[in-house]
Image 1 (spheres, one colour):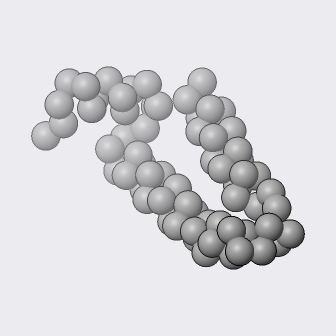
Image 2 (tube, helix red, strand yellow; image 1 turned 120 degrees about the horizontal axis):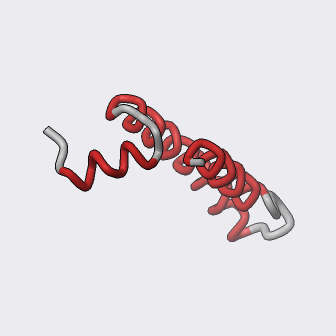
Length: 68
């Protein structure tokens, strides 16, 4: 079902295919929720000054801690 490269990636992140799919979908939902915030910020820079950046950092930090 999965290519060798896919299996290697799943091993690298210590997740099953299902776990990885759910994690990726969760991240996608979080990022999608940030889109309106970024649009508002584009027109009103005084609003949501660090919201998107902080959330993306949290996502990356969680990902790094899970990979190690």
